[in-house]
Image (cartoon, rainbow, N blue to C red; front, side, top):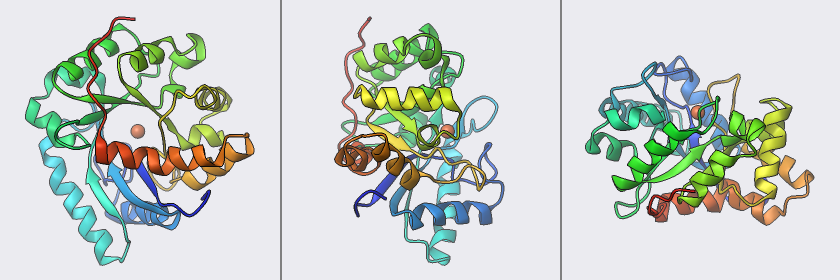
Length: 253
Ligand SMILES: [Fe+2]
């Protein structure tokens, strides 16, 4: 890790058997143990909330408690929080209570992690995030660098989101090149342009492990200020948990 400050994972598929993340409880424990070994103190468990994976949002609390207990029994020193990677097409299907159950940040300034569609950040996505803002939630856009929005549209969709008050989270695996050269180029370009608030692993299992340490080292090699690197994996996400994302008025770019 760059420096000694503890890091925070805001995007991490930690729960076993609920999505395309770890399959067994043992794999989940090992995955979170690897995060702790990299200097991570808090992991927000963010299963896919989509029609093809988790739809019973209120059942996630029990799953998080089960994993937290297994981590404690194995002596893994980490705080696990309940969250979600929300598919934008689920926004209109979830009640206020369900959205609140997977939101992060203080009650006065809650926010949700919303998955960027690979095919692009388009009108339906903006409508969904506008609805979230209308319902009181800020938005953290997950891995926009992996979307066609970055590859083909110069991140126009992301920039419209940022103008509306959303923030951006980039994947550690994109930075290291594990998601391919296009995602790597896009991740570095977005960070260079100051458009990114958080880097998270988006870990999915032992074949897609936590990589914050490697990503931070790669950013320093790329010429990014080491202080900014620490902020992207530590201070930035920690502030979002403590202070939230202000709900900005929905703007039309
Ligand atoms: Fe994810």
